[in-house]
Image 1 (tube, rainbow, N blue to C red):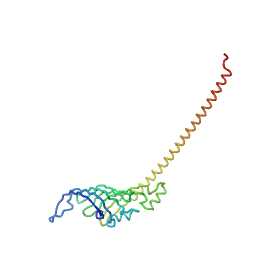
Image 2 (spheres, helix red, strand yellow):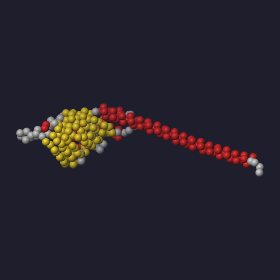
Image 3 (spheres, rainbow, N blue to C red):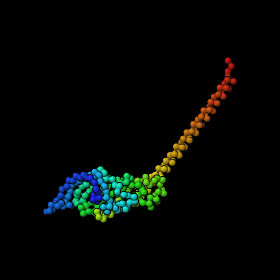
Length: 231
């Protein structure tokens, strides 16, 4: 994998491969087929050894792969046609960033990976964060945004495609939803207040009506007493 040479720790792997051999009994890499299962028992990442991690670290504000958590990570791989295809798996950084990794790399060191980052909006940079913060009452540190990242090139010279436009759109949609929810809550509060006031008014009117009826009944009884039939 692209960052395998940056890991230092304990691992467990199971391999199931078949393929052709050369006359010198070395495998023909393009002919390999099968699968593998890898588990990281515990490992530390030395990001300075990986051009890919160094680029990600420099391109995304506050992101530090020194805090990459790989404990108990498992990954399933398939070998086919000279490609190592990696099934999606998740890793976390800084306890507030989640990355889903999926894609493939070739035995020729070519890369074709898709990273789906879920991270606080503040990681997107001050320019984007400050502009969007004006529209929102929610703290950017608590707003999680999805940032797609494409990885191409090769192990030595990886190329990153950060879809900032998609991340900005995702954040804008969340801000709009938050504003709609706030307006909805305010409207509901006003309606509830109106209904409660109406109930109190109806109750007061009912009490006034009851008092008037009692006075009216008492007056009727008095009149009957005065002008009632003589025995």
